[in-house]
Length: 456
Image (cartoon, rainbow, N blue to C red; front, side, top):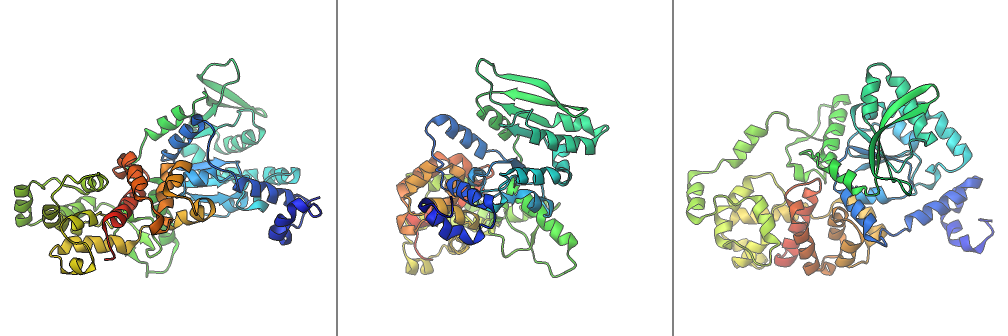
């Protein structure tokens, strides 16, 4: 039917050469449909849950879903598609998504037919061996899966057999199933038992219709370093240890700058934070005197990020540029707003910039613009889902954590500055902390450049 029916003509042109078996055409049509789904919601419930989910700083996600929702929510997580990719790769168990039943971005990977499921079952012991460390060392929360799901039971049973003994109790304590209650059931938090063959595994069962409670509880256990940064460092440490090449590039970088990392092979700092911070914070006595006299002794980079998105600045631009930016210049931060204050001090174009006496502020501005404002990992999502939309439409159609990386890909003359300013103001706390802080700071610098800047 697929080959003969005119409704599938476009698909045949696109996928025809790749369809080599009966089920392939169905997989390609399913994948095409899923890739075309909108992320808009008819009511606020799912939207609130998605927002709460996006704010979690979890180590990893294992899913049997084929759609691209998780990639949209966690754009900086590395994705492993299918059992084979996971089995034959080097996962770091941090900031990763494991799509064990395949993904619509790769139609041939979908676990769909009886043969696909049989093949999946045959490889389960290998998958279990790969996941055993995750299940033993981390709490594992199952969302939307019944404790009676045979595929989940098979994986848990395989891992339980490998663990055994004293570790089995620790393994059981890590298993948490979250289900939506049936009609008439109340919310519950209780123990449950999974029977797998002759074995019994105890798990925790939570029933609730409001998953935001779960996401908020997990989000409350924050780590200081975003998962994406931990994953990158762990991955590069592994590469460094296994490499015999001594010519490895090393660099000291601010955590906010570990995103565009193509020019660095390894970034690490162990046991040097105190010394490094003391060196960065050290200033001359003259600078201290100037700052104290003028009331700018306590102005920090955080303060400037909050100020740059205000309708009216709270600082005297000349004093800030003269007394505070020399200190900012000594920091390793690549992204610090400066054009708002330069403009207020009369630096309004390339000529006045070159002649300006605010040498350190000029260097801060040049460093920020030189780094660029786009993060490559958001490019595919922009091209696929958001190209041609207005700034306001982008903000409305996705989460703040996704929009913050998408907006910089808009042509600069199409960025809606009032909408961008409101977006940054609404998410002002994310400029201070959170797993997306570096992206929000980069976007705030783009706003500073577009609203007040010029080609430096």
